[in-house]
Length: 226
Image (cartoon, rainbow, N blue to C red; front, side):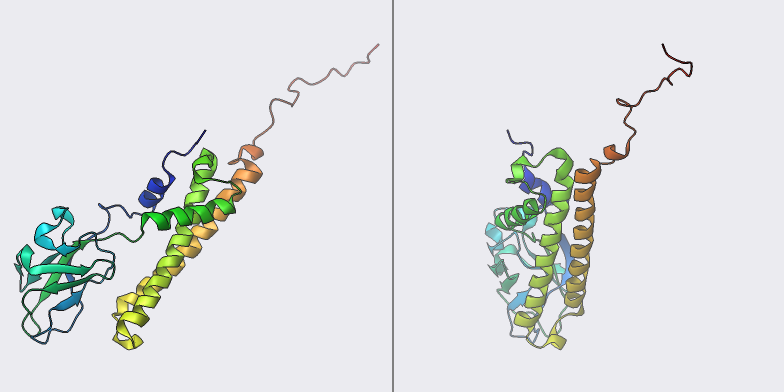
């Protein structure tokens, strides 16, 4: 019988990657504002919205664009590639016109979370994520989170190279994101290994507890026995 009802859902919550967690407001859009360009990118990729935003299935997660503080109509915004965070505008902004975007995204697809959990249970000698006992679930989440942050560091690095070409053309924050996810991957890995060790060696410190069941609490008599 499964002991972990929703490991993938719990991992998404653990990573703060639900649709309610990752919402960005008033962020600069990426792209050349030369008076003719209509194609831009959000800093984060994997948007929750796609297509013309007037027809977005989830209006609370739609991409919103503001030019000089005025919001554009939904029908003039088209998310052409949600995975890349790419969108086009019906009309090009003027040169250096202030442009801000508000949007929602998720870092990890469901199949990726399943993959991270599959790798995690290999580290704790369990055959299926649903069968991880309660005492090891926290360790499994930390192992999976380490793999997730490791992958995010790779994705940010590849985006820096592929999307912006020369490193110096990429926003400084991309390098910061690579460093951040590398640090978090190491932290979660160290924490996971400690949690695993505590479970198997000490059973969450129960191995350090006095064995009252086998200790004789009443001292034996000191008089000679016959």
